[in-house]
Length: 372
Image (cartoon, rainbow, N blue to C red):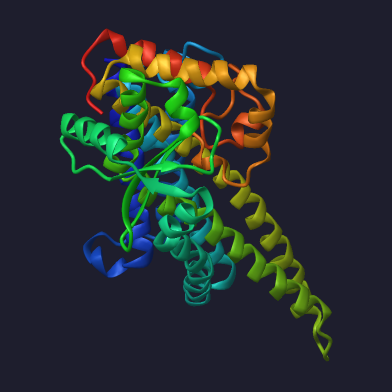
C-alpha cells in the first residue's frame, strides 16, 4: 500500500511540473484555464515540494541503510519519477523566477541561447561517443562474446547490440554506449572476463543491456542538460551584471543597481545549477539500480550479486586499480564505483551507488518477480 501511495505522489508531482512548464512555454493551450502567473508559480512550487517529499519519505519508510537504498522495484520507480520531477520542477522555478526579474521575452531568448551552449557539446559527445570510445579503449568485436550477448538479449526480448572487448582496459569493467550514427555496443574488458564467468558474466551483460533497454544514455543526456542550461543562464546574468555595474553615464544609478541585481542573480543560478546537478547524479545512481534489476531478471539476483561481489573483492585487493578509477575522467564508464555503505560527499558526486547498496537492493528482489 505504501509503495502505491509513493508512486501516485511521484506521478502527481511530475504531472504538476509538466503542466506548469507547458503553460509557461505555450499558454495558448490553456485559454479557458488562465490563471495569474503567481498561481502557476505556486503550483510548480507545490509539485517540486511534493517530489522532494517522496525522495525524503521513500528511504525513511523503506531504506535498509541510513542513506536512500531502494527496497524494491516499486520504491525505485517512485524515486526515479520523483527525482525527474524535482529536476524539471527546479528548472521551471528558475525560468519563472527569471521571467519575473527580466521579463518573459528576454528570459525565453536567454533560455534558447543557453540550450544551444549546453546542447552542442553534449550532442557531439552523444553522436560520436562510440567512435571515440572504440579508439580510446581499443574495442574489438569478439564472436564468442557476441554469442553470449545474443543469448542474454534473446532472454531480455531485445535486439542484441554489438559485443566488443576493450583490449586497452586491463581493469575488470563493462559498459554500454550507443549513438544513432554508430549503433549500440556492449563492451567488456579482458579483466572482467577473467573474474566473471557463466551466470555472473551474463548478469553483467544483462546490466549493460538494461541501460540500452531503459534508454539511459538518452535520459541522462536530456536531464544532464538542465543544470548546464541553468549554469549558462547564470553566466549570462553575471556578465550582464558586471557590464552594467561598470558602465557609467548620466543618471546611471538605476542601471548600476540593476547590474548588481543581475550579478547576484547570476551567482544564485550557478549555485542552483550545482544543486540540480546533484539531483541528476542521484538519478544516475537510481538508473544503475534499475540496470542491476535487469541483470538480475535475465539471470538471477544471486548471479548479479556474485558479479558485484567479485568486482568489489578485486578492487579491494588491488588498490592500484582502484586508484586508476578514482583518477579517471570517465568514471561513468566503470561498472564499479564506491564501496562505502553510508552516504558521503564522495557518493553524492558519483554516478554509481556503492556496491553494498547495490547488493542490498538486489537482496530485496529475491522476494518476488522482477519486472525491469
